[in-house]
Image 1 (cartoon, helix red, strand yellow):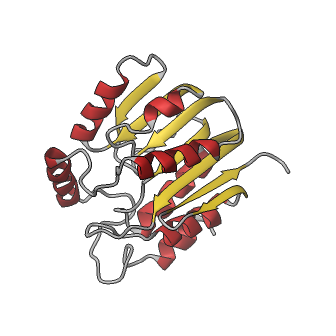
Image 2 (cartoon, rainbow, N blue to C red):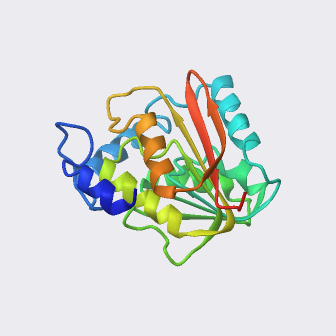
Length: 217
């Protein structure tokens, strides 16, 4: 299914009963809420839990089939927990978020890395359409989007892939008050819109990791 099909099936913009902006438009009240959350804590939903978080990141990195990548995009980078690890395995990392406090933390953590570029982008509308990537990592991203926006982002991912590219998605099953899309919805939407071969699937009681590639079988 392409983005238009998902847009038609998501006329209510995500989960039933929720009034969200559609077609990539930004709800400024949501952004203000995020700014308040990140202003109070770098980890507003308590996603970083020591060993469990490290284990998830280790499994994520081990799921990447290549030792080295050329051009990586990490949208929704948050405070930058994953950037340094990706920078060790790629020539260039573009990391982006729409929360300025999170970006400030990410820049502080990665200021010593010359192959990292951190940008403020509002997604999906602000997707860097002029760039192409051989690795796109969707790490803990999409929980707060409605279905139409997530489908548009998946379409943007598909259109930005170089030959032989990899797409990795990692999402927790944990529920929290601001969450709109569940992990299975995020994963199934990506799978349908990307239309790529699934290379790896990791199913854990706490999270799921999926890896797709456009390399010929």
